[in-house]
Length: 279
Image (cartoon, rainbow, N blue to C red; front, side, top):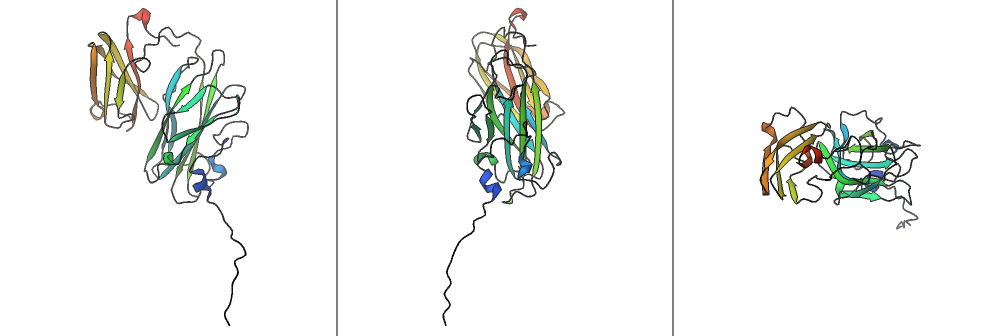
């Protein structure tokens, strides 16, 4: 006798990692009051139990109200093969502080309603599947208006093993406290604001080329930052009017630091009474 089978239903169990590869839900950056982070799903290990590093690079020591900053989320873990992060910035009342803006398709911004929190997070492309050792994401942050006071960055990162399920992944969290500058911005003479310049590649591990134009002969300073947050002056001197091309071989500069660097400042210096002063 021929047996006839009837399919009465299909159970579908979605993979959490696959779903969140397009970006985690809001509220998992380790921020108060619940302090949730990615271990809510990726719970093989406690947060910060791996041998990796999570950092937020190029943050100012004190922010200037309404000033725009380019910042970098850096996550390193030798076991990582897929990557993710979530970040929010709040003031002392718990509301959104300033504005975050993505600069490419590896980062997206989830906008909170009104003054509720925004969250920056990876996109599917920004998980960098199969990429070993580390990942870095770039975004911009416009500081809040004057009188906001101290702001707080909350950041969570996922160094995943790319096995298709949320097991075996290491989660890292970090918090950064940035006070408001009490002095006014005397002069905005950074080359990144109003000058034509280009840096390639940025970030870099071995060589960096900086190209920019000067309206008149000027003294210029170029600084970079490594993944551990240390800064280095790599150039300070007078340059000619017009186009300038500077090439730096970081391997030969004996920086005694990490293998990844980001140019954090290209600034034209003038007489002391005209120098940008931020305290």
